[in-house]
Image (tube, rainbow, N blue to C red; front, side, top):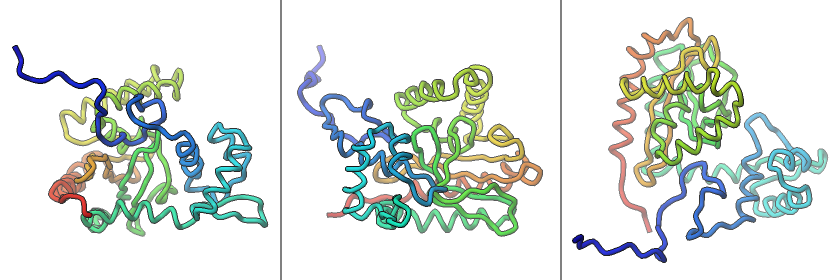
Length: 283
């Protein structure tokens, strides 16, 4: 007979919500504030290429009623996260939002270490080095470094790329907890429709199998025909949140062999440095 005491069904399980979590991911024993979720959906609706957005576009992107969007815009503007542009009748993300990201990147010197490592990789030339996080069914660049001589796509910090076809996305899916990965795959299947079974899922499955054997993700002409990339997952030393570090560029210059020989060792070395960071939370 086991000496282990039975679990108390009334006891709340503590722990962080996973990255990219939505309202349906929370169980009844964890509080969920709908108004806060709607407010966050407004901020998430802004994309890197958006200078300003109006109420109608935000309502369409969030699925919220225009009246609700209007109230949330007023609150977010008063809090300083948005700026109202009266001459256009639209709203823009303010620099106050950057403070949230800097609070994360500054932890343990994470941001400084990553930038230094990324600059070392980019110095090899002809490549773009990116640090990414999951944003629903995309990966968003939170840091991007490239040499002026590199041939690259028009991507910047805040740009999003598709999860299933890209090296960062595949690295993230490989590292994600099983429950999260299964949920994301179901969403991806709905998002891609018929293309999912035709070619997206088989290519993704093959890539994840290769990552189990090779220790890194890849995307050779699958996201963009003339683009090659490899990537690895990184873990925040405190929260366990998943980042991905990737290097990519023009396929005619960055062949799979060159990526693995010249850039992969530096990616793996950066991952080792990050894993060595740590320390408990400060008061």
